Image 1: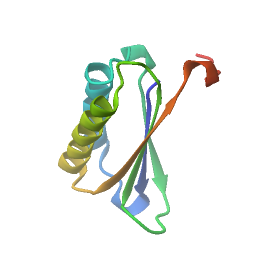
Image 2 (image 1 turned 90 degrees about the vertical axis):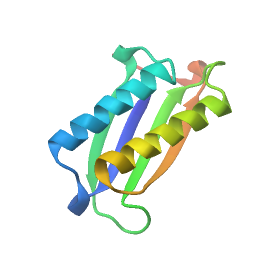
Image 3 (image 1 turned 135 degrees about the horizontal axis):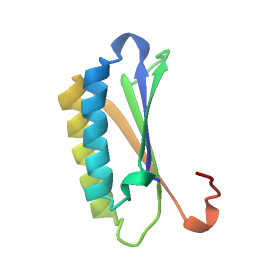
Length: 108
Protein backbone atom coordinates (compact mmCIF):
# COMPACT_ATOMS: atom_id res chain seq x y z
CA UNK A 1 0.00 0.00 0.00
CA UNK A 2 -0.73 2.72 -1.02
CA UNK A 3 -2.92 1.81 -3.95
CA UNK A 4 -3.87 4.73 -6.16
CA UNK A 5 -6.74 4.04 -8.54
CA UNK A 6 -7.94 6.56 -11.09
CA UNK A 7 -11.39 6.13 -12.60
CA UNK A 8 -11.43 8.27 -15.73
CA UNK A 9 -14.31 8.85 -18.15
CA UNK A 10 -13.66 6.77 -21.26
CA UNK A 11 -13.82 9.68 -23.67
CA UNK A 12 -11.34 11.69 -21.63
CA UNK A 13 -8.67 9.07 -20.92
CA UNK A 14 -5.27 10.73 -21.47
CA UNK A 15 -2.54 9.27 -23.67
CA UNK A 16 -0.24 6.54 -22.39
CA UNK A 17 2.59 9.08 -22.22
CA UNK A 18 0.52 11.42 -20.07
CA UNK A 19 -0.54 8.56 -17.79
CA UNK A 20 3.11 7.52 -17.41
CA UNK A 21 3.98 11.07 -16.30
CA UNK A 22 1.09 11.13 -13.84
CA UNK A 23 2.15 7.71 -12.53
CA UNK A 24 5.65 9.04 -11.95
CA UNK A 25 4.27 11.94 -9.92
CA UNK A 26 2.03 9.58 -7.94
CA UNK A 27 4.96 7.32 -7.12
CA UNK A 28 7.00 10.31 -6.00
CA UNK A 29 4.18 11.57 -3.78
CA UNK A 30 3.57 8.15 -2.25
CA UNK A 31 7.23 7.61 -1.44
CA UNK A 32 8.18 11.14 -0.39
CA UNK A 33 5.02 12.49 1.26
CA UNK A 34 3.41 9.26 2.50
CA UNK A 35 6.71 7.52 3.23
CA UNK A 36 5.74 4.36 1.34
CA UNK A 37 8.26 1.84 0.10
CA UNK A 38 8.50 1.93 -3.70
CA UNK A 39 7.70 -1.79 -3.97
CA UNK A 40 4.38 -1.18 -2.17
CA UNK A 41 3.06 1.56 -4.45
CA UNK A 42 0.48 0.64 -7.09
CA UNK A 43 -1.04 3.06 -9.60
CA UNK A 44 -3.99 1.87 -11.69
CA UNK A 45 -6.15 3.52 -14.35
CA UNK A 46 -9.69 2.34 -14.98
CA UNK A 47 -11.62 3.42 -18.07
CA UNK A 48 -15.23 4.07 -16.96
CA UNK A 49 -18.60 4.99 -18.39
CA UNK A 50 -19.18 8.31 -16.74
CA UNK A 51 -22.55 8.91 -15.13
CA UNK A 52 -22.31 12.11 -13.11
CA UNK A 53 -19.72 14.19 -11.29
CA UNK A 54 -16.09 14.99 -11.92
CA UNK A 55 -14.46 13.30 -14.94
CA UNK A 56 -11.79 11.77 -12.66
CA UNK A 57 -12.31 9.93 -9.39
CA UNK A 58 -9.09 9.14 -7.54
CA UNK A 59 -9.26 6.57 -4.75
CA UNK A 60 -6.27 6.06 -2.50
CA UNK A 61 -6.11 3.14 -0.11
CA UNK A 62 -3.29 3.25 2.40
CA UNK A 63 -2.11 1.71 5.63
CA UNK A 64 -2.65 3.90 8.69
CA UNK A 65 0.65 5.00 10.22
CA UNK A 66 1.34 7.50 12.99
CA UNK A 67 3.30 9.70 10.58
CA UNK A 68 0.40 9.90 8.11
CA UNK A 69 -1.33 12.67 10.00
CA UNK A 70 -4.20 14.79 8.67
CA UNK A 71 -1.76 17.56 7.62
CA UNK A 72 0.36 15.00 5.72
CA UNK A 73 -2.70 13.59 3.99
CA UNK A 74 -3.87 17.11 3.09
CA UNK A 75 -0.43 17.86 1.62
CA UNK A 76 -0.62 14.61 -0.37
CA UNK A 77 -4.13 15.33 -1.68
CA UNK A 78 -3.28 18.90 -2.65
CA UNK A 79 -0.17 17.78 -4.54
CA UNK A 80 -2.08 14.92 -6.19
CA UNK A 81 -4.87 17.29 -7.23
CA UNK A 82 -2.28 19.60 -8.78
CA UNK A 83 -0.60 16.70 -10.62
CA UNK A 84 -3.90 15.45 -12.03
CA UNK A 85 -4.88 18.91 -13.26
CA UNK A 86 -1.41 19.59 -14.69
CA UNK A 87 -1.17 16.30 -16.58
CA UNK A 88 -4.76 15.80 -17.68
CA UNK A 89 -6.45 19.20 -17.54
CA UNK A 90 -9.29 17.45 -15.69
CA UNK A 91 -10.85 18.08 -12.29
CA UNK A 92 -10.72 15.15 -9.90
CA UNK A 93 -12.60 14.08 -6.84
CA UNK A 94 -10.04 12.56 -4.47
CA UNK A 95 -10.88 10.20 -1.61
CA UNK A 96 -8.34 8.59 0.73
CA UNK A 97 -9.16 5.53 2.82
CA UNK A 98 -6.79 4.48 5.62
CA UNK A 99 -6.75 0.95 7.01
CA UNK A 100 -5.20 -0.34 10.21
CA UNK A 101 -2.54 -2.99 9.60
CA UNK A 102 -4.57 -5.50 11.63
CA UNK A 103 -7.46 -5.24 9.17
CA UNK A 104 -5.40 -5.78 6.03
CA UNK A 105 -5.00 -9.31 4.71
CA UNK A 106 -2.89 -9.39 1.58
CA UNK A 107 -0.60 -11.40 -0.66
CA UNK A 108 2.20 -10.25 -2.93
